[in-house]
Length: 113
Ligand code: FES
Image 1 (tube, rainbow, N blue to C red):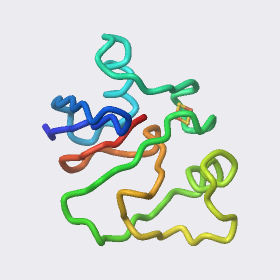
Image 2: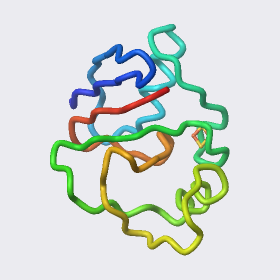
Image 3: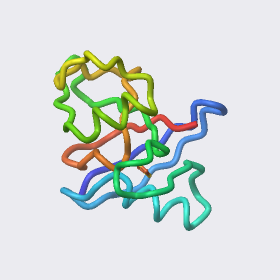
Image 4: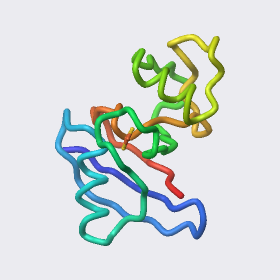
């Protein structure tokens, strides 16, 4: 199990929960939204609509993130990623990611809102 910490960037509220190792972030988001504990828009749940934008802060910032080709294409269409961006990008809190494409393999701090 890993610890997820969601921080609402509008009002700085925090929500913590445990998540299954290897699960997808959107699964945790769906459950929390369904329970009324988290406000995060999501639609398709399959990584194609670009609605589930989040920002992730990993414990070891400064690492590089390898985007999948599908995530990159959706981020170009819906999250302002430059079309000529490489698939490997710096892992910073400013990097927009899609919850549908993030596998939980560490504790995560997730900025929403
Ligand atoms: S909900 Fe559509 S890309 Fe995540």
